[in-house]
Length: 278
Image: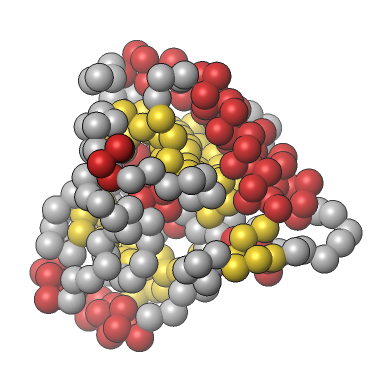
């Protein structure tokens, strides 16, 4: 199906509500006066009861909202590419993005829910349960920030990067090769933030650039990608091509760059095309 803006805008409030409900499940675990129990997945990333509780909430409510649209979630059973390659439209969900930040109890984790249509992220919600802030967008409808009190305001990327570029970086995933790339941007201000909050900060003009080398999955980026796009920004791989979703047998993204100022050739400036990798 090709989804129209009116349909996407009609679903968006419900998806925000779903993200908030998942956030309540996360906070129930996060705020409990008990030790957080963690297991390790096959890729050695942490898994908690909060991840699973949020996933159950999102899965049930998305199934009620759109019964015919499949969902891929970080904590759900994987679907083989031979099966999902026929899914024109699907939900991509990370029920708790930033589990390491959750375990540190620093508040920098999010619920990410995205709708993909024809390999493009066309609707996205990035919700931070601790602050109650949501970044949301739907194709053709613009992007906005929703605060904990329900107040909404449109957001827009910073279209002209200042002389000192504000660069977003992961708080928990260090990368010496990335550090060398970013040296080419001096002078710069580095802003370390966990989870998909980086996309939200970029979308509301609080930063200029987000560069990520190394392993991320499609459910890590799709919601933030939709928000950045509708806020006037761009997300591309190190060859300058837009990120696409559900197009390959792997759900691992290539390295990518997200930015607001399209007048600057960030790929060439960083020399990123020579350093591409998953």
